[in-house]
Image (cartoon, rainbow, N blue to C red):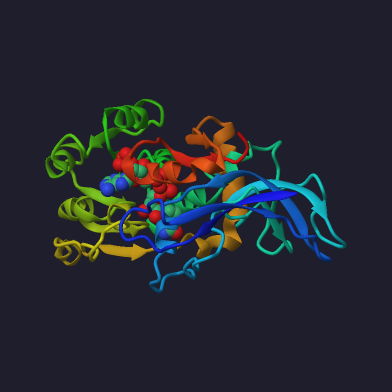
Length: 334
Ligand SMILES: NC(=O)c1ccc[n+]([C@@H]2O[C@H](COP(=O)([O-])OP(=O)(O)OC[C@H]3O[C@@H](n4cnc5c(N)ncnc54)[C@H](OP(=O)(O)O)[C@@H]3O)[C@@H](O)[C@H]2O)c1
């Protein structure tokens, strides 16, 4: 049986290009005792993958040159050898990487139930972005009823769930997104109270007018100038959740930090970084609660699915060029 796999060939400077990866065919080896073979169905595309390609120290080891590109995935067990807690026919989620098949000893793999929710949703609302949103807004920001919550990257995988959970908790929610279509979507479909189009307007003026009492929580997915603008409008005891800084990930030189940070001092405010993996022991509880909200119609699944592992690079670039809505996913089989 042939596996198509995407090898990491060269660390990019700026956006990945044709030299960054190479797609190759390989004959799958025989399984050894305790291993399972997974036919991958969906691969997750996340902004964090850009960071994993850098050599710098981070919360996770960088992807090494020659490795299969690291990615979250869901798939079906199609073969097993000897004893394993997984059976042929089981659906699983894990770190299968950008390839059509993966071989695993079962470590860090979770059985998922396609009857409970669609397979792709285990990469989005019930996967890493959903967990980030859930624990970020509830446990890091500790939102309470009446808070004004400002969210950047609001039409993306994490931001769109953060906003919906904040609405469930009775907050006034304002999202920042690029373009009219995304702004209309987060208001009309996701129920945000207001939206700011950062590509067509002055973000500082817009925050002032749409958060007239200031901001209690800023959930930051993008960093850069938008973080600086949000800092101006903090209320006393405001909390900033430092979730990501996508506007900085492809910088060819250094990352730009905020100028307006003294607003934290003046307003007795805090900014705190989070890494979702720290919450892994609590994922099951979050999955149950989010599934309940989906069934009650309080959370809308927001996914953008493209097909074909051959198209990986062009689909990956959609994370950074605004040409996608919601959780970006690659369906392996065309
Ligand atoms: N800390 C953690 O544990 C953790 C876990 C998961 C994700 N994250 C981080 O959370 C953030 C959001 O992740 P996600 O999965 O929601 O990604 P996503 O679905 O790609 O959404 C991110 C959004 O950012 C916007 N964006 C892209 N480039 C931008 C720029 N230069 N300036 C402003 N906005 C820009 C895009 O929308 P527009 O079209 O509106 O620009 C995009 O929809 C990322 O920074 C990611 O690294 C952190």
